[in-house]
Image 1 (cartoon, one colour):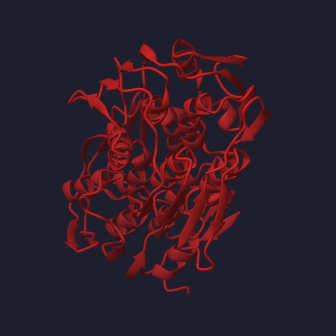
Image 2: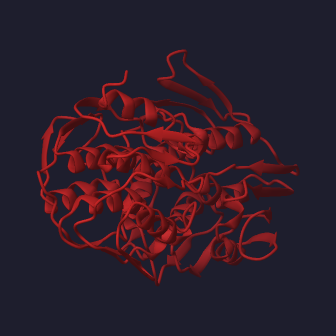
Length: 422
């Protein structure tokens, strides 16, 4: 439990690295069968789950004393005919992206499982896709744990991707399949994350072709990953909380360590905040957001950036006009049903809210009150609620803040720095 109060905001911070990029870098290095170097990785619960998984598979991982560099040696990985259980904790990214790669190692059986939240996240569409590509699997229902066996052969499949991680999983694994593959996605959400995965394939000179809408992919089989040296970029998802912090307090906050040309989907939150009246200025790898006296309303499609829903709900609390978030039904299958959970918290804070199947309508002119709110063990909801305390005249209490360690263990330290507390 944590209690927070309103404070004046100012200053600049350096943002942590991207979780999504770090996990992709770790998996490619592990399956490269060589010695790789990863600069500026993120260390959090989710990335630690990936490190643990890679270590269990046989990768030797060492970390520099300053934690700025990770060295990974996968030269001698050999789990042929072994039976393993990999616990990915709360990391859906690790679970989904690792799945198909496991079919290239010749293990007898590998069980993928996680914590209570992860084992409620749907994986059946991915399981069925990999069954059609040569792998076998046993699971009860539609969620982990899942027992995986067999070899990734390749072939032609069609898969509905209500999370982009399904397609990213296939993109990472199918170059290592025995045969060529074709993947069709009649439905694909969160397309920027697919572009992120493609950037990693390009760094590895992987041969593939993909349609402009990213929904038809042809991948050559029999390829391999090579040892490499890479640098992980700053995380727009983590930065989004501080962008909104500036927006709702009418202050200026500078966030360092971001690339304005990054393909990360959550970068688009800057466009949303500009539409709501904020000023956004770039200086090299730093961006400054300045909030206006009054935020404007509007309708915003968040399909490509569902992780921003919780924090943009907080921005909506300051808007004088109605704010509607649409086409973000994919937010319901994250760590929690973020649409329902945020509606409950917004109502507790004093907002008038309409929950829709694909989003939320938040009425303008909310007077926010301090109260007890629920984090639902979801890191993005907890961090968003912490930022909302800056709108409350009374004390705000969050029932449990511990889940922030999943992606952003230093969040409250940086939050306190901008409030002048440390």
